[in-house]
Length: 113
Length: 113
View 1 (cartoon, rainbow over the protein chains, first blue to last red):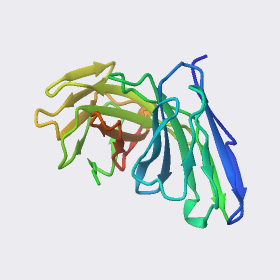
View 2 (view 1 turned 120 degrees about the vertical axis):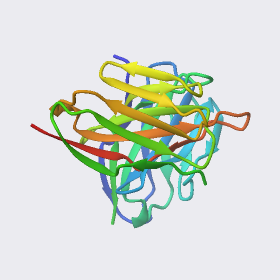
View 3 (view 1 turned 180 degrees about the horizontal axis):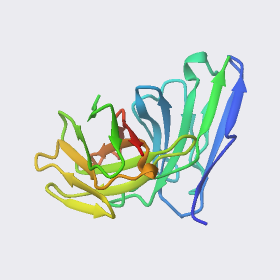
View 4 (view 1 turned 45 degrees about the vertical axis):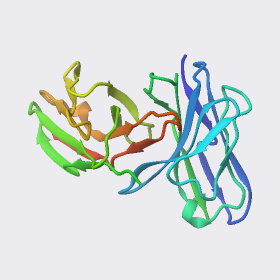
């Protein structure tokens, strides 16, 4: 089944403890992206990747890192999480180029205490 | 940065009624996308629009890419209870510098039986 998977789905952590949220897609998509969703603000793009080893900042990149060493994986790294990073996170992927229809993962709910 | 405005913020309608919502911006885009999100799920793509003036249907859903490239609307005909959810518009302007997506804050639709 074609899909985007994220792990973990739920995470509660404490300020300053490094964490990684994994994202994987099995559709051979070139483009991958991370979003955070907060009430009243909709989805805001954190980082995106047009292809392996090519990443770029979205609208809200501060406090986050990403890497794209393989086509299928695009992990989101929070080196030192803070409470204002408590949010619902979505990973998405698309074929890229002129095909911009993004497919979303199920989401990761992160709470930073 | 670029912003999308969606209206209405929320709407309550009777089953069987038609629904209209729109998305506007002061910026020009070359792709408009409409997504639906249900509780606990990631957004699901409904319609993608690539050309100014384009009108596209997907079952009871119809969306149009505004001629000015600054807006889009989504119509749902003969609403049913499973149409309940949050509808997001998204837009992107693909250029040589990347593919940055921006989402609207959403329209929350409730359908009363």
